[in-house]
Image (cartoon, rainbow, N blue to C red; front, side):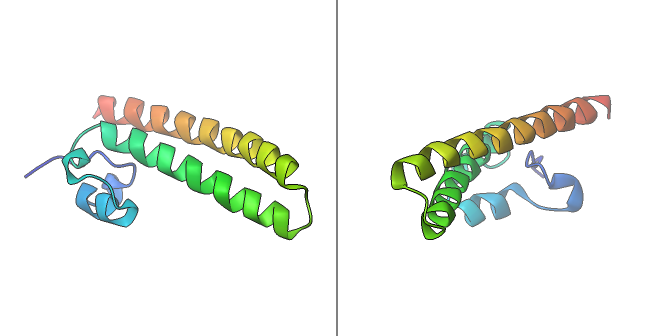
Length: 93
């Protein structure tokens, strides 16, 4: 049986489920790199979603992109910290 590395493995989520959800290369399953690729994908999705919301709210396209990147960077930093904490916790086991 392969070891799942995804952030929700302790909740019973298998790496292949994450690969399928994000339409990623199956070779990423059961590797530590999976989380990095997922984090980048979520970062990109956040930028798109925040930018779209801001534009719907009437914000200028250029400003919406700038603000979306700034907000997505904050979310990515939070995700990076959570991932580091998870790796530290898993090393203790």
